[in-house]
Image 1 (cartoon, rainbow, N blue to C red):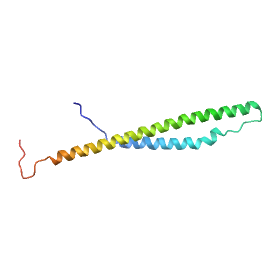
Image 2 (cartoon, rainbow, N blue to C red):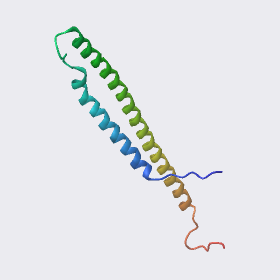
Image 3 (cartoon, rainbow, N blue to C red):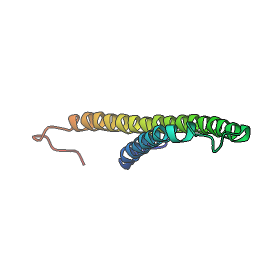
Image 4 (tube, rainbow, N blue to C red):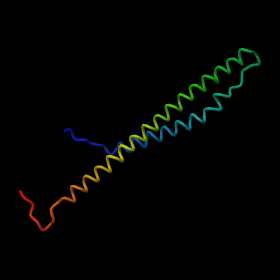
Length: 110
C-alpha cells in the first residue's frame, strides 16, 4: 500500500488560486463597459458595423474569461477542501494513535 502524503502549503496555494480568480472576475467586470459600449468612430455604416462587431467579440471573450475564472475559483476551493480533509483525517488518526499509548505506569515492551 502506498502512503498518502500532503503538503500543508497546498492550502496556501488553494487560497492564492481563489484570490487570483476573484481578482480576475473583478477585472472582467471592470472591463465590460469600456469594451462592450464602444462608440463608432464615425457616422458611416462601416464604423457602426465595426463597433457592433467589436462589442460582440468583447462580450464573447468576457464570457469565456468569466467561465475560466469561475473554474479557477472552483479548483482553488477544491484544493482547500482537500487540505482541510487531510488535516482533519491526520488529526483524527494521530488522536487515535496517541490515545492508544500505554499508561505512564506501565513499561513498554522492547
